[in-house]
Every structure is written in C-alpha cells, then in structure tokens.
Image (tube, rainbow, N blue to C red; front, side, top):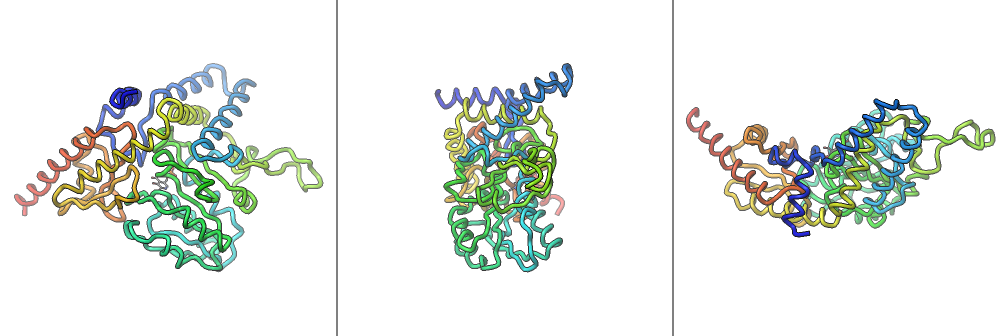
Length: 399
Ligand SMILES: Cc1ncc(COP(=O)(O)O)c(C=O)c1O
C-alpha cells in the first residue's frame, strides 16, 4: 500500500492521534479500534452470560494461549517460554526475586534504569544483603560494553539493564553484555519496556535470560497487560516467588512431595485470575500489529521518524539533543536552553502536543510512534518555538 494511504488507514483506526499531537507512546500508546472492540465484546459477554460458563473458561485458556503465542512471535521464542504478566515491572520482579540470594552476591546494573527495574533491585538489597554495582553511562553514547565489563566479577549473579533506555532513548548493546555476563554464569535480565514494539527483538540472538515487556506502550494494548520471556537456563534457575493455581498442575503426587507441582513451562510464573477483557485487547493489538500493520514496517517507520525528529531538534539553536543518534529508535530526549523541562511539557500540552519530562537527566522526551507523521514533528517544533518565546519573553518582562 502507498505509504501515505497506509499511515492514513492506521491513523483512522486510532482516534487519539487526531485529538492531539500524540508523541508519548513511551508512556502509553494510543489504542487501536480493534483493541477497544475486543475488550468491549468480552466485557459484554461476561456481563450478559456471566463469567463462569464452561465456554468462558475454555475461551479464557485459548485467549491466554493466543497472547503467549503472539508475544513469542514478537520476541522470537517458543510460547512455552512466555508468561503473561500485568506489566514490565512484574516480569523484572519475577526474575530478580527468583534467586536464592546470599549476602555478598552481586547485581550489575546501570544508572539509566527505570524504577520498574530499580525497585526490585532495591528490594533484594534490603532483604538479602545483595550488593549492587552500578555503571554510570551518561547518555548511553560511550563504550557501554567496556564500562559494564569492568563491573562484572565472580560474585555477579545477575545483570539487569534496559534494551532501550527510558531517559535518553539509547539502545544498549545487550548481546555483547549477555556474552560477558554468561562467562561468569550470571543471568541477564532485560527491561524491554521501551524496546518491545519499537525495534526488532530476538531473544535467542540476543542470548538473554529474561526479557520483560509491557502491553500498553509501543504495542498499543490495554493497561494491566505484559509478558516475560525466560530462557531454558532461567527456567532451570529461577524459583517461584508468587504462586497460585495458574502456576501449578496436579502432580504425579506423593513421590514429588505434594499434590501440585509447578507447570513445566514459563506459565508457572502466572498466578491466578486475570482481567479477560484486557487479555482480549492485548491479543487484538498484537494481531493487528503483526497481520495488518506489519512489524518490519513498524520498526522501519519508528526509526525513520525518530531520526527525523532528532535532526529537526538538533538543528534548532539552543536545543541540545541527548539521544545518541547512532543507537536510537523512537525516543528522542532534549533540553532547551534557559527553559524548564516540566514547564515546557505543560505549555506544550496547552497547545495540544503530548510529550513528557524526564527526571534524570532533567529533559523533555518525545516518542515517535509508527502512527505519527512528519507533520506531527513539525507541529511539535512549531509549538516548542512558540512556547520558548513565551517563556523567555515572560521572564524578560518580569525579570
Ligand atoms: C524502561 C522502563 N521500564 C519499566 C517501565 C515500567 O513499565 P510498566 O508499567 O509496564 O511496568 C517503564 C515505563 O515507563 C519504562 O520506560
């Protein structure tokens, strides 16, 4: 299909991108129509037929299997290696809490991690006396592999890092880092919150052990959906932290020491009842992306628009773009001289342009989604210049 017609068709399916200049998929993606329809149809069926019919039970099992299947396709693995979660942070917790930590064991991580990864790490520091070694990466532009190599040692049991950093939008060299970590027998846990759906991911090629993703960001699904991949090594080594009926099968009983045993697949990391409309929405989103939009097209388009935004911003006097241009996807982070990022974001919102501010480094971040256009970027730039004049003008008259 012709590019413009394809983008138009995609945008027609996502009303939120008409309402605003929507440049914050890194927080929540816009919902496509098929997702809302799938959620509505499951909600209505549950309302009218009730939730405990036999058909509903079977449909639930099928839908969850379909969700694992779609995620496996996206990440390049087998569905048995996927557990459904509520968000990225769930997946990271399952990994970080899954080791029987001994005092003095080490986690290597970076100073670019989101609280979704920092939280679980802090937790095991507090509870088990785990040591953390944090590599300082600046904007993520330098020699990341050597910097991490210096911190990995014989006590390292886990390396936790983002594939695409939430703050400066840098793609980190996960494959090379995984090789280093595996040399000392450490598990590699990846926060895929910003990479899943924004760049190609193949967990086997990357050789990682855990890859945690959300449904609600670049994959345009509902909140409360996510998934996590486990390598065979991770499945062997990680203990269950939260366990329920969804984790277990009726076992061959006594010899194994109990009535239930954990499922043989990654499904053992699932716990209990889930919100079926959300899972239906997640499946609809992933199917739509794969079948109708096309992942290769999506990744190419996000990379092109990200670069377009990078170039346009970098060309503006007084704007500093922090995102490393040779290792980026759709996130672009920048500062504007003499302007407060939070104030800029608020003022841009008044002009109907949705971006966000970041705490470290204190800056503004835009997300270029596959449904955005060059015109969206131009509208951001136009609004940015107007807001800057307004803020600096106000300061001159009051100051
Ligand atoms: C890199 C990164 N990790 C984790 C999260 C938390 O995501 P979730 O709400 O899916 O747990 C975010 C969300 O903004 C993020 O950008």
